[in-house]
Image 1 (tube, rainbow, N blue to C red):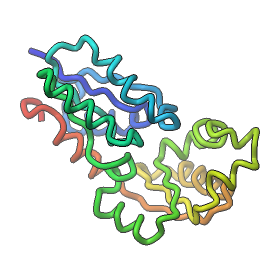
Image 2 (cartoon, rainbow, N blue to C red):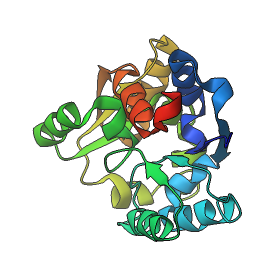
Image 3 (cartoon, rainbow, N blue to C red):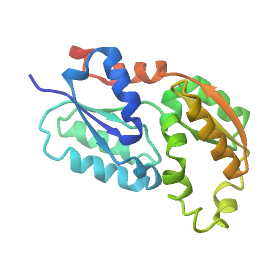
Image 4 (spheres, helix red, strand yellow):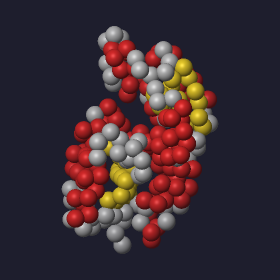
Length: 203
């Protein structure tokens, strides 16, 4: 039997393991992760995915990515894969904030305040490495206004109920000079998205 491949952003590792266990399919798929810092260089996401999928044959693939800033290039890759007879499915939406919160709730948050910088549990935990240092703000604090001058608030879209994650997100908001809000969303919408993307025979 051909084992489906789940190829995901490293930022989803903890949540994806939890959801695959919840769905009871952890042992029925192969899971690989790409580096989370690709968040900061979305133009590299599709080439990295293509490299991983170069010799997978006809295995079905679920990508643990939304569009993630690729500007439609990921969907174009999916179309090319389909033309070559390879079934590659991605998670719905424009980014992880949307598939974690659900499209409707995320739209409500965005409409309420477009100037929002969102954090997931992973991004809150790794804020220093991925954002503060990743964007060079530790070395060039003058860039803070350039990157975040149009933002009003930070919203933590949390999957767990870990208070240390909330405190990390509060600290991030203070560093950015923005208001802080917390929206606990859990993993319900994410689990639904993963379940839909998996091949029917193992759901």
